[in-house]
Image (cartoon, rainbow, N blue to C red; front, side):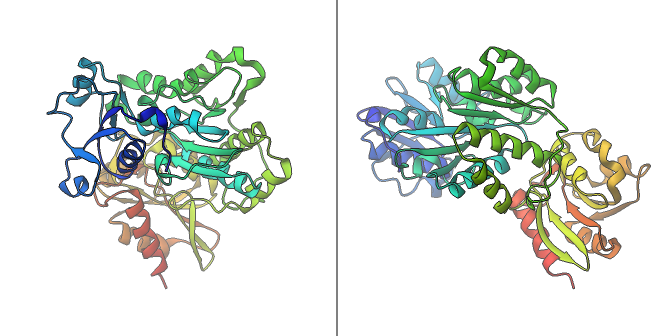
Amino acid sequence: MITSPLWRGKRFAVLGLARSGAATVRALVASGAEVAAWDSSEAARAGFSGATIADPETIDLTGFDGLVVSPGVPINRHPVAAKARAANVPVIGDIELFAQARASLPPHKVVGITGTNGKSTTTALIHHILETAGVPARLGGNIGKPILGEEPLPGGGVYVLELSSYQIDLTFTLDCEVAILLNITPDHLDRYDGFEGYAASKARLFAMQSARHAAIIGIGDTASAQIARSLSARAEHLTKIAPGVCMDQSRWPSLQGPHNAQNALAAIGACQALGVSEAAIDRGLESFKGLPHRMELVRTLNGVGFVNDSKATNPESTAPALAAFPRIHWILGGQAKSDDLDACAPHFGHIVRAYTIGEAGPRFAAILKPLMPVVESGTLDAAVTDAAAGAHAGETVLLSPACASFDQFRDFEDRGDRFRAAVEALR
């Protein structure tokens, strides 16, 4: 695990003991810190030797050096955040602790990737290219293992961190050698003072960064373009990725569609900034296998491709998937994050038929019926059966729901697993 002598003898409260919280407690205790840990789940509270089990909402926080909260804790409205600030205790996350520990680690670099959509694919792609090139690398942040639970890299290694806005909100000193912003579209607005507050959170990744370090920004939306303009003084250290760039993606089977062209360009720019050779970058792009639930080709049956894009939980993230295939049987619906499908509309010409499911199914069916054939399947299993019956060779059955999953599933991964099982059961 990653530890730091800076934490020895200091006092921390940790709220939230899922994966990142548990790794944080262990790293702090191993560093010689005094830790008060808490989770609302009794099962999660069990098994933390060396840490005091105490609720930060009920104990006196005076004299603590930090309150470390899970990114899932809504600090904009949670009472413990106000309590910590009143006691002059910084509210931080595990990424900030990693930033503090960097000085005691072997010499290394950090790549930070944020954006509403495409973070996980771009993060995994950069990590894969680095490993292909023989560069020691660790994957962390919002993907893979908690970063504090990882073993430190040897000298010359690269930590590749996927960073959600929630994680950035809890981070104050992370100076990334390469910082990437892919895009900003409305999401998580319950945590911010409108869309502007959400965009400002993403911009903080660059505010923490030294001007001499590389900034890579997709400028396909107004908010991201404004952030890029604010960094124009960085000159050669700023790379802008314009929308609609034509690329030969035929050699990259897991990187199809215009959104993956942007992801690939961001990864290429990051790896070039890190000194990776063009030949190694090409090998990495060609051998990348993609991530589960993100444009994942599950199976080809009778010439029909079945693609699992369950991670697309809003219309903006579904739109690129619709652009990637010429004839689509589209499975959509769930717990809606918006009342419309306007972001998807430019690609409606690719859709042969839509199959609606879940809580948003009736609303989305009403939107789509004047524009295309629609089947109100109701459940995912029924939609797979309906779409398989209607699809012909050369077409694609695409689960890209444009919705959250919590009306019918545990999470988007559960939804994608259920899709995969239904597809694999087809005969």
